[in-house]
Length: 101
Image 1 (cartoon, helix red, strand yellow):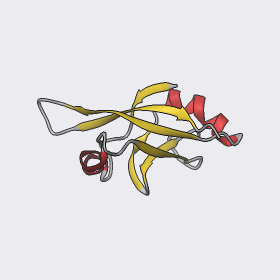
Image 2 (image 1 turned 90 degrees about the vertical axis):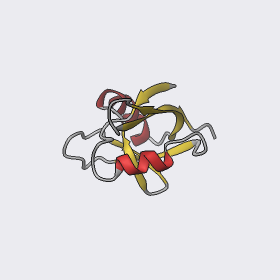
Image 3 (image 1 turned 180 degrees about the vertical axis):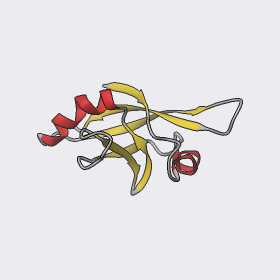
Image 4 (image 1 turned 135 degrees about the vertical axis):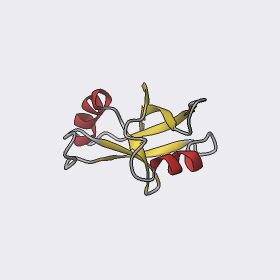
């Protein structure tokens, strides 16, 4: 189990998305591989349904992506909403867990 802060949270509508869906009421998030991502071939997006919350940081994605590509399934579990006292930026910390079937 890995715990990490999401990357890319300041792009597109992710600040809005995290403010609305980055809470303990939303217990889990879906992970989706993004192998065509120009910034990271191991990219894994974190989603609430189809709503983007951000991406796993490159070092974490590098560990998880090969396992997903081999058929293992993972999800992200809410840990905390990260707020900054001197601006409106927010972030999201999650735990990456394997789906045990």
